[in-house]
Image (cartoon, rainbow, N blue to C red; front, side):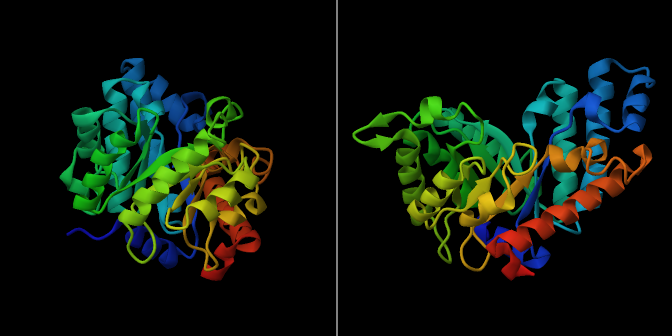
Length: 313
């Protein structure tokens, strides 16, 4: 049997001494000028040229952050927007990250019924052996809103391959409450989804943690604390830190007392640090990789200072 996903993740977190997770969210007009100019002068069609720029950006970002953090989270949508060339670039970035020794969480938010859900799982979830699927990810984000039975094919593949999934429970966007806060029988929808996820996590647990995790946003710190208590066996993926307004103090409740049990994501704040007010005066435009490195170090230090992740240092 393949090695348990959360055991692999926690080993990587312990090795790097941080739960910091860097999202890879390429947007063409935010890329470094050199990559934009290279694409525009390539003579290729726009989609192919942009896809090559995305792949180069993603791989060079990985070169910077791989020594510092345990995992990356490429956002599939930005690649898929470019069509076939973009999906090829996504696969290249995932495989490059795996070869760099990183855990890869593909942010695809997939979810469907029966055999279709199983097809998604088998396509994306390579688990421990990166070459076992076309995409090669360790883990995938999953949408549960077609019903609990749609999670079962993902869980099955996770156990077979040493992979993991993070299920959308309490998302970080401002409008999440429109659906997720709806009540039935005195229970909010996100609370019921959390209950189902925790049951699956408990069934698949090793060393106290399941292969089924939950996405819970940093922008709702009170709910985050509530859900950590309600889901003691569920690893958390916490978006919303940084550019979306979440702070290290907001995510502190996601962790156990030793600093495990969660990864905290920053995408724009790292990817485009060289364009932010905080770093653009410190680094010239061609020093974008140095700005990314500095922003990553700053995130690691922030989490260490204000959360139990400091115990990892």
